[in-house]
Image (cartoon, rainbow, N blue to C red; front, top):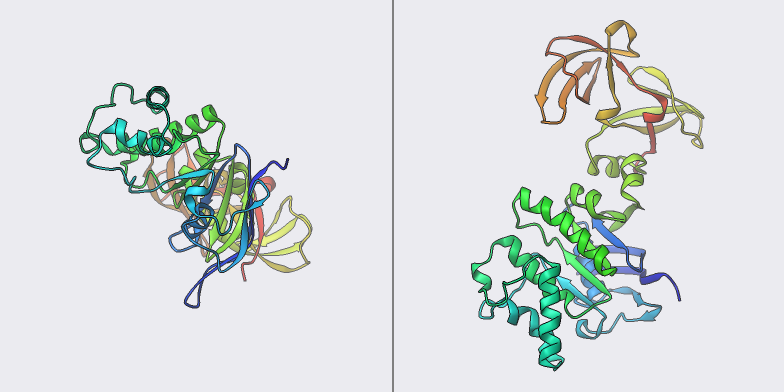
Length: 346
């Protein structure tokens, strides 16, 4: 049996002439936490709804364990969905909300009680059976929604920006909680978000989307360290992105001088985008710098200082645990391995 539990094959979606998805090809591995990441309107929720059966593609097909489920209604698919608004039943208590799908299946009462008890422990809500959902906090309601989806033992759980309504502290707690639940149960999660931190924190694999197309698929480390283009680099983390010219293998020119790098395979004198992460730009004494500049702003970020250095026509964003005051003249040093060369986005 293939390790691919879901496959999207040549999926396109058109709304009255507007292309929401353009020839998407994507597979999701069994027990994987895959995140669809991108800005509003990029097509990530449309893709999730097609996987869930809530939307039909204009063309292409959806495979589940190698079977074509493109036209199968949601209730016949071996998956469940957690929406951003949770969609809990306000007239039912926590127990009744979670039990809803099990009662439809007409399971034995004792089996339902055992399953709900296990689910409440899994989502850290033991003893909440008789609570009204309206009396719960946003985080607790979200846990109930997850328990209701998981109690039916789906092979895949789809999550459409489920943390969007939570405050920052609770959102960070739930990121870790969701990853723990996914690993404990060993099921496949397909998660939609526009939040890069959520994607980096939880995912095994990230698919970065833009304008209905997948720009890059990879692990969080690969996406962060080796973005394929300026859009991905700018969307995942903060970046210094400059126009450059790849003179030859391992030699690039930007910011008015030549730099050794570790990239190859470009055309000689090809115009490229050059990306250097703020934490990879090193401040050194002015006389030791590859470039020279003046610090124009300093912001304390808690774990580091964020500084802006003006060097010629370039404003460098730099993250460092060491602070230099505004007005200081400094040197900038960049190691070859910290320079990422990318193809220009057409």
